[in-house]
Image (tube, helix red, strand yellow):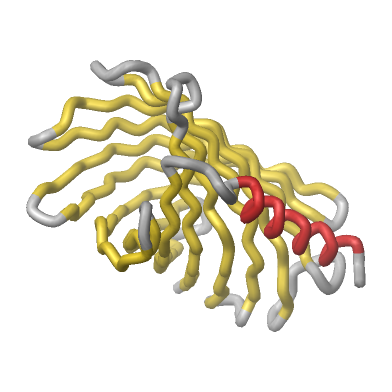
Length: 222
């Protein structure tokens, strides 16, 4: 077995075992679909639809929680950098949540892999919740499992780590996320990913919260 495949399997097992036996633990599904449309070489539109359902929280039971519909417009500002501005609307039963988003992404090509940095600000507001500001940083690494580059009909591995700072009228909250994923490039226009999204929240408080989501992602490029 190659070193890359060993790393992939190890990270998945570590993500699962780390949260085993933890209190304040939730497990669920996080499917999403991404549609990307290129207006020009420098401008792109992204539409994303994502749902969230809890399968386990103290006991096993299916519990639909929310659906997010988001829109981003992207402007390339350099060979390896771009800025994003967007809006998210969250449907949570009888209430609605809105979010504005600003992002800067920098991609560093490395030998046989790619390292991406994302700096983001967002502002969340709703009729039944206070205004929340978040400052986020995410680092991501992606590489092919079958060669030096990711080609059609080949698999790849991607892992991201993100730190989120929550600022609002509530006490300051710190959250850390780790997301290992296996992907498959079907064609130049389609790819799918299956992975885990582990979230550790309320680190400063006495009772941190652990969420583990199974992610299924479908990316479409038109």
